[in-house]
Image 1 (tube, rainbow, N blue to C red):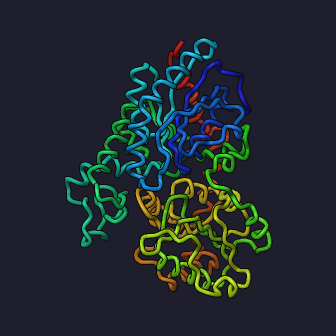
Image 2: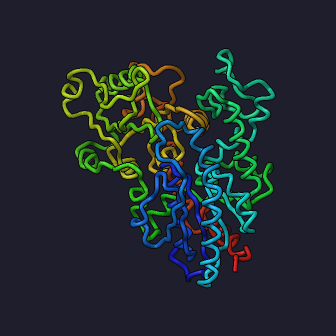
Image 3: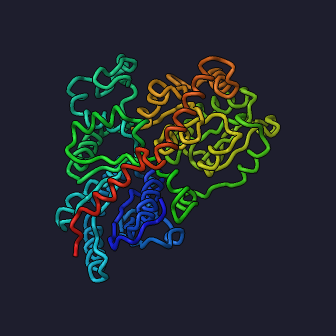
Length: 468
């Protein structure tokens, strides 16, 4: 997949300004650049990517009016962005189209994050085709599509007495696995999901950061419901590392500073001996849960690398400035634990010392773990993470999941079962995840599913009449 002759066509990409969305959008940009397209990135001033890390792209920023996001939860942040970005984005996109026309490099289409649903109306106004990038898995989009039905049939709002029941319309999901968030305004959340689904249906096509062998069943189901083409061309980061102009795309798009010192720490450990713990860039845990996790990790007697972001732990409604470890806890580990504020995750998961990944099951983390053949311990927090965790534990069977409260005794049991592999379940989990790792690799081989879908995507884009 060497870089082809320049297509003479420009693409405009708009990422949602959250870590788990910026990374795959920039990885996709690298993939499309490698196929000969010129790339323009329009981005918000909030959580802006660093253009210096991508000299082969053209960047333009738009004002979003967000100066402090600390008072906004995820739901209200997405709502606000879809309101405030309309006018500045429309004006910027019109300028980019005009300038590209003057430079005889017409814009073929817009590729926007699916959660930026406002861009469909803008694209319609400017008569520009819009393709959406869905940065989560295909499996988790199915319950989003079915939300009106799930509400009608009484699954939502959740009732404690039904949490363990199977959702018969979308097995093996349980009621507690439905992709909800903790909000006092659920109607607003339902409306946002409706906007997401309708905006996706109205687009020209959907790009998925997944591969066919992983999610063939939900892919087939959604194809029956949507009258637009799908392009499952993941895992993006594996293509990016092999073929893109920027081999360090994961680190260069990180909004948090990665602590590389953990790699040299991993170098000192035996293969498959370390448990890597990271709950993503947004999740927060209580101080009580933090202590159960800490004591469980310590009692497992296995070395662990733990990402503890600033503000990740909440005590009495306030962020803890420092991790609330008990007195003497770190010293008593005698070097078995290593704490960082953020880690180069793809590099960590690829390290031979890592034997298991305790994760929040964000889609990027899930896919990265699969691609390196690392079994997972699942502790989802909200939205699609819950669906991903159920697929990891019950469909693909490449990990285990906490089904209730996190207790240190269960932590020890899970870690030892996966790391030591001295039970049948642990051994089978490792075999299955290694099988999926191979399938992910093959998907990018010549003739593989992702390789083939990428060619189809390129041809699809070239079929548009560029804005001249």
